[in-house]
Length: 86
Image (cartoon, rainbow, N blue to C red; front, side, top):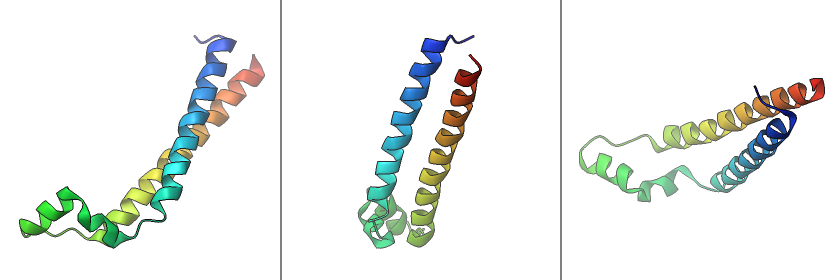
């Protein structure tokens, strides 16, 4: 069981992580799908004759950031509710 201080610290740490992911997403939104072509893994896939769909990959990465941020927001809401009951 967490005490008030530990929950508060956990809440603050979660907010910091969420904010870091938001900043990374903002930076990634300036990335175009073709910018991913310089990535070594993508280059290797192309050489092996299994080219990746850069548009889909770009959307998957963006979606993953958004899903993670949403999870952080949910956790923050849960922590805030627990703290309000303390």
